Amino acid sequence: MPSDWTLDPELARDTTEIGDLPLCRLLLNNDANYSWLILVPRQAGAIELIDLSDADRTRLMQEISVTSLALRKITSCDKLNVAALGNRVRQLHFHVLARFTNDAAWPNPVWGQAPARDYDPKKREQLIRALRLELAIAAARM
Amino acid sequence: MPSDWTLDPELARDTTEIGDLPLCRLLLNNDANYSWLILVPRQAGAIELIDLSDADRTRLMQEISVTSLALRKITSCDKLNVAALGNRVRQLHFHVLARFTNDAAWPNPVWGQAPARDYDPKKREQLIRALRLELAIAAARM
Image (cartoon, rainbow over all chains, first blue to last red; front, side, top):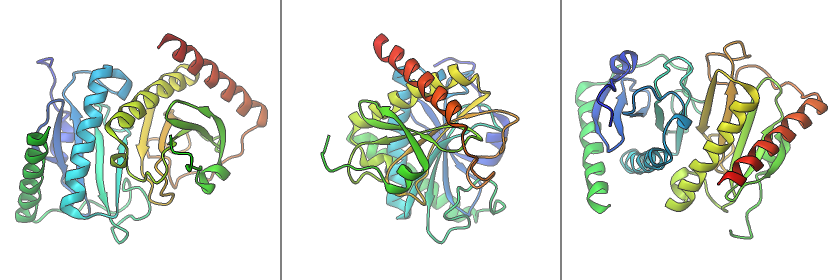
């Protein structure tokens, strides 16, 4: 990993750190409307998926999958949404979202719908702890 | 490939077929506001990314990459957007979009913004031909 990677300041401001996977920093978006993860490959300068090497793209897909499985297990969501847009924040980042048919934006994509809602700090801590546990279990199996 | 896969009727209605990659059927969305590709893994019953095998997910990431490269080369777009949402159409499908800072939705995601605009049939045919050529070149290199 290049040592000059740093997290985009806007992503840092709007999220809570969960931890580092082999490639990505895993973040929880500070919006209690949704259970919304963001994966940021720790590769300086990457903006598009195609800026990553083949090996890193395969690794990213694995990390999207393992976080998707953990998120679905914890939330029992109706649908997962995954996306890399980056029209506002350029640093390559991948959204992994748990969606419910009664959530604040369903069936629309979440962007630009309901204003962000603050987490109850205890509930956020519970969710992060549950995610770390599921990801540790998944890592132990691999 | 299972023989019982068929393209979702809504996707079929709203798109023009470009061709089959090893895993995915590649479609052009019939909306001239954007150059908008849709990749549909030909695996019956798949709804989420995590419904695919590891090997198919790696293959899907390769097909997203090769179509992204072709699309950027042809359009000289400012940004690529990639997403698998599936809140309305359940069949697993992946959007790959060329975005411009002066397009009909920028910087928002495209869904639910401008109404779809019909293609000039000649321009659509040109775009599809250019994409097939780029993808053939990419395949020959692999």
